[in-house]
Length: 387
Ligand code: KIV
Ligand code: ZN
Image 1: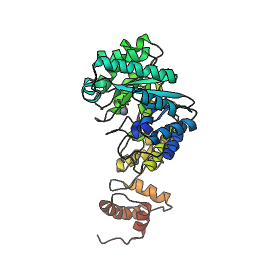
Image 2: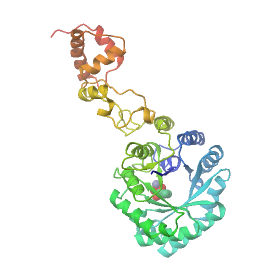
Image 3: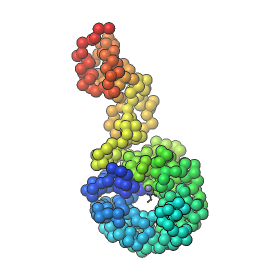
Image 4: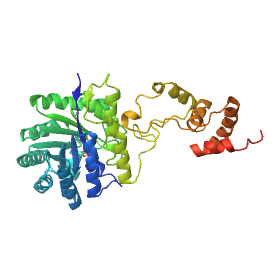
């Protein structure tokens, strides 16, 4: 028995808030179409009150992407909510995403409001949003640093005004997996248990590198929506990476009996499209979509992978749509991989020829980080240097 998890992609909103990640309207629409093809359930397209461009982008995504829910972010003010609802008016399935901080530090220094005032703001905001659209999500910003009793009180109030999705953001990436799982369990038992139609959502930031681990802990604890971004882009150290969460379900179905609507073979192309739009790539060792995610350079690993990829791979590059170029030649590579690459290039080498060229290869690899096919051909033609 597997449970379907709703994938809420916020690349175009929380992702776009990261330095260097802003996108034009056309880029947002292009990427939203890719997300729809990828199979996400919800696209958070922007924060309409923030700028005319964001308003227009939400409007354009809502018009173009008809098979998904399109969400727009708003604070609890009338101006924000009306603006977001307007931007979504052409959506086939609109969702207003209303957020308000619940931690004391945000109340004191940012909102300058008392708990009673915040409770009231949440109620009024959700009530208005619900008068404008069917589906309202409420996020308790900085939930993981909030007093749990107050958090539950605000969530309960948001539900009673009509929110059907309650999001528990780890806004500053502070929680540990066991702790975040515990918080989700508490919200489930104290709030959601009395409202069976409510969905609990996880929204994790990566300041301690735990966004994906925390998201998985939340799902194991009962969250049924996960908020994430492609390539993990987002404020500061980013958000939970969609591709990592989804592949954790796919690869570890033995321990994580959850499914999503994501077509995993489209993960790599989607990551590439985002890199192209933003003008920068993910780090080479990024899980799932990094250039080195399926590359093997060490001789022992190469030998193992050439005999059976399962020796050193827990998923195939094909399963995420990445190029199946597993073997990278460098100073750690062995004769086995070298002979195979020469054979692929059309050169069958005798053992003596292989020995000779292997010596030249290792000398070159000491000087050069990566060896390309042209280097190999040049090595065959190079005169052997004096021993
Ligand atoms: O991290 C956060 O708290 C957010 C909310 C607006 C959902 O992005
Ligand atoms: Zn966030």
